[in-house]
Amino acid sequence: MGALCKLVDAALFIFFLFIAIVAPLIDGQTCLPQHLFPPFLKELKSWYAQEYGDYLISEKPHFFVGIVWFELIFQWPLAVASVYGIAAAKTWSSTTCLMYGVSTLTSMVAILTELTLSNRASDRLLMMYYPFLGFAVLALLRGLLTCSGKSMTIGKRPLVVSSRSNCIFLVPVIKSLIPQIAGF
Image (cartoon, rainbow, N blue to C red; front, side, top):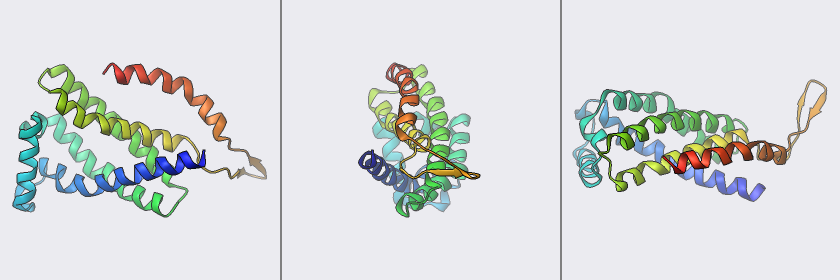
Protein backbone atom coordinates (compact mmCIF):
# COMPACT_ATOMS: atom_id res chain seq x y z
CA MET A 1 0.00 0.00 0.00
CA GLY A 2 2.93 2.32 0.70
CA ALA A 3 4.19 2.15 -2.89
CA LEU A 4 0.71 2.86 -4.23
CA CYS A 5 0.40 5.91 -1.96
CA LYS A 6 3.77 7.20 -3.13
CA LEU A 7 2.69 6.74 -6.76
CA VAL A 8 -0.60 8.56 -6.13
CA ASP A 9 1.25 11.33 -4.30
CA ALA A 10 3.71 11.69 -7.20
CA ALA A 11 0.87 11.92 -9.74
CA LEU A 12 -1.00 14.44 -7.59
CA PHE A 13 2.17 16.46 -7.00
CA ILE A 14 2.67 16.84 -10.78
CA PHE A 15 -1.03 17.68 -11.24
CA PHE A 16 -1.06 20.26 -8.43
CA LEU A 17 2.14 21.82 -9.74
CA PHE A 18 0.53 22.09 -13.19
CA ILE A 19 -2.58 23.72 -11.66
CA ALA A 20 -0.48 26.09 -9.55
CA ILE A 21 1.13 27.41 -12.74
CA VAL A 22 -1.71 27.23 -15.26
CA ALA A 23 -4.65 28.49 -13.17
CA PRO A 24 -3.48 32.07 -12.69
CA LEU A 25 -1.78 32.40 -16.10
CA ILE A 26 -4.34 30.80 -18.41
CA ASP A 27 -7.63 30.45 -16.52
CA GLY A 28 -7.18 33.86 -14.94
CA GLN A 29 -7.63 35.44 -18.37
CA THR A 30 -11.29 34.43 -18.23
CA CYS A 31 -12.16 36.85 -15.45
CA LEU A 32 -9.23 39.20 -14.91
CA PRO A 33 -8.41 42.28 -17.04
CA GLN A 34 -6.54 41.38 -20.23
CA HIS A 35 -3.84 44.04 -19.75
CA LEU A 36 -2.43 41.95 -16.85
CA PHE A 37 -1.27 39.20 -19.22
CA PRO A 38 1.58 39.22 -21.73
CA PRO A 39 0.68 38.79 -25.42
CA PHE A 40 2.12 35.27 -25.69
CA LEU A 41 -0.24 34.01 -22.95
CA LYS A 42 -3.24 35.63 -24.66
CA GLU A 43 -2.22 34.00 -27.95
CA LEU A 44 -1.79 30.62 -26.22
CA LYS A 45 -5.28 30.82 -24.77
CA SER A 46 -6.91 31.85 -28.05
CA TRP A 47 -4.99 29.10 -29.90
CA TYR A 48 -6.33 26.55 -27.41
CA ALA A 49 -9.91 27.85 -27.73
CA GLN A 50 -9.76 27.64 -31.54
CA GLU A 51 -7.83 24.36 -31.75
CA TYR A 52 -10.12 22.46 -29.37
CA GLY A 53 -13.34 24.39 -30.01
CA ASP A 54 -13.65 25.34 -26.36
CA TYR A 55 -16.65 27.65 -26.50
CA LEU A 56 -16.62 28.09 -22.72
CA ILE A 57 -13.25 29.84 -22.97
CA SER A 58 -14.24 31.99 -25.95
CA GLU A 59 -17.85 32.84 -25.00
CA LYS A 60 -17.34 33.10 -21.21
CA PRO A 61 -20.82 32.13 -19.97
CA HIS A 62 -21.59 33.50 -16.52
CA PHE A 63 -21.55 30.15 -14.73
CA PHE A 64 -18.10 29.39 -16.18
CA VAL A 65 -16.72 32.77 -15.10
CA GLY A 66 -18.03 32.02 -11.59
CA ILE A 67 -16.32 28.63 -11.59
CA VAL A 68 -13.04 30.24 -12.70
CA TRP A 69 -13.31 32.80 -9.88
CA PHE A 70 -13.88 29.91 -7.48
CA GLU A 71 -10.85 28.15 -8.93
CA LEU A 72 -8.64 31.20 -8.46
CA ILE A 73 -9.84 32.12 -4.97
CA PHE A 74 -10.31 28.67 -3.41
CA GLN A 75 -8.80 25.87 -5.50
CA TRP A 76 -5.57 27.55 -6.55
CA PRO A 77 -4.37 28.16 -2.95
CA LEU A 78 -5.27 24.55 -2.15
CA ALA A 79 -3.18 23.37 -5.10
CA VAL A 80 -0.21 25.44 -3.94
CA ALA A 81 -0.61 24.14 -0.38
CA SER A 82 -0.89 20.57 -1.68
CA VAL A 83 2.33 20.92 -3.67
CA TYR A 84 4.12 21.94 -0.50
CA GLY A 85 2.28 19.40 1.67
CA ILE A 86 3.08 16.46 -0.59
CA ALA A 87 6.71 17.54 -1.13
CA ALA A 88 7.29 18.01 2.61
CA ALA A 89 5.20 14.94 3.58
CA LYS A 90 2.93 16.99 5.83
CA THR A 91 0.10 15.16 7.56
CA TRP A 92 -2.41 17.84 6.58
CA SER A 93 -1.86 17.26 2.86
CA SER A 94 -4.64 14.66 2.87
CA THR A 95 -7.02 17.38 4.06
CA THR A 96 -6.03 19.77 1.26
CA CYS A 97 -6.32 16.91 -1.25
CA LEU A 98 -9.81 16.11 0.03
CA MET A 99 -10.92 19.74 -0.14
CA TYR A 100 -9.46 20.19 -3.63
CA GLY A 101 -10.94 16.91 -4.85
CA VAL A 102 -14.46 17.66 -3.64
CA SER A 103 -14.50 21.23 -4.96
CA THR A 104 -12.98 20.31 -8.33
CA LEU A 105 -15.28 17.32 -8.75
CA THR A 106 -18.25 19.61 -8.17
CA SER A 107 -16.96 22.15 -10.70
CA MET A 108 -16.17 19.48 -13.28
CA VAL A 109 -19.64 17.96 -13.03
CA ALA A 110 -21.14 21.38 -13.85
CA ILE A 111 -18.72 21.97 -16.74
CA LEU A 112 -19.03 18.46 -18.21
CA THR A 113 -22.82 18.59 -17.92
CA GLU A 114 -22.84 21.83 -19.93
CA LEU A 115 -20.45 20.41 -22.52
CA THR A 116 -22.35 17.16 -22.88
CA LEU A 117 -25.90 18.52 -22.93
CA SER A 118 -25.13 21.44 -25.25
CA ASN A 119 -24.08 19.07 -28.04
CA ARG A 120 -21.47 21.67 -29.01
CA ALA A 121 -18.42 19.93 -27.54
CA SER A 122 -16.30 17.64 -29.66
CA ASP A 123 -14.87 14.41 -28.30
CA ARG A 124 -11.48 16.08 -28.43
CA LEU A 125 -12.66 18.86 -26.14
CA LEU A 126 -14.27 16.41 -23.73
CA MET A 127 -11.00 14.49 -23.59
CA MET A 128 -9.31 17.71 -22.43
CA TYR A 129 -11.72 18.03 -19.48
CA TYR A 130 -12.08 14.38 -18.38
CA PRO A 131 -8.55 14.13 -16.87
CA PHE A 132 -9.44 16.96 -14.48
CA LEU A 133 -12.42 14.89 -13.35
CA GLY A 134 -10.14 11.89 -12.89
CA PHE A 135 -7.59 13.83 -10.86
CA ALA A 136 -10.40 15.29 -8.74
CA VAL A 137 -11.56 11.77 -7.87
CA LEU A 138 -7.95 10.71 -7.20
CA ALA A 139 -7.40 13.71 -4.89
CA LEU A 140 -10.67 13.01 -3.12
CA LEU A 141 -9.74 9.37 -2.55
CA ARG A 142 -6.25 10.40 -1.41
CA GLY A 143 -7.88 12.63 1.15
CA LEU A 144 -10.19 9.89 2.41
CA LEU A 145 -7.60 7.13 2.67
CA THR A 146 -4.71 7.22 5.08
CA CYS A 147 -1.30 6.32 3.73
CA SER A 148 0.61 5.82 6.95
CA GLY A 149 0.60 2.77 9.13
CA LYS A 150 0.91 4.91 12.25
CA SER A 151 -1.80 4.76 14.85
CA MET A 152 -3.47 7.90 16.08
CA THR A 153 -4.55 8.52 19.64
CA ILE A 154 -7.76 10.01 20.86
CA GLY A 155 -7.47 10.78 24.54
CA LYS A 156 -5.59 7.92 26.21
CA ARG A 157 -6.62 5.11 23.88
CA PRO A 158 -4.93 4.50 20.52
CA LEU A 159 -7.12 4.63 17.48
CA VAL A 160 -5.96 2.02 15.01
CA VAL A 161 -6.12 3.33 11.48
CA SER A 162 -6.35 0.48 9.05
CA SER A 163 -6.01 1.42 5.43
CA ARG A 164 -7.42 -2.00 4.52
CA SER A 165 -10.68 -1.25 6.32
CA ASN A 166 -10.82 2.12 4.57
CA CYS A 167 -10.39 0.39 1.22
CA ILE A 168 -13.08 -2.19 2.00
CA PHE A 169 -15.45 0.60 2.99
CA LEU A 170 -14.80 2.56 -0.22
CA VAL A 171 -15.02 -0.35 -2.70
CA PRO A 172 -18.85 -0.16 -3.04
CA VAL A 173 -18.67 3.63 -3.36
CA ILE A 174 -16.03 3.42 -6.12
CA LYS A 175 -17.93 0.65 -7.92
CA SER A 176 -21.07 2.78 -7.95
CA LEU A 177 -19.19 5.81 -9.30
CA ILE A 178 -17.49 4.03 -12.21
CA PRO A 179 -20.65 3.50 -14.33
CA GLN A 180 -21.76 7.07 -13.65
CA ILE A 181 -18.43 8.52 -14.75
CA ALA A 182 -18.12 6.17 -17.73
CA GLY A 183 -21.69 6.96 -18.83
CA PHE A 184 -21.08 10.69 -18.63
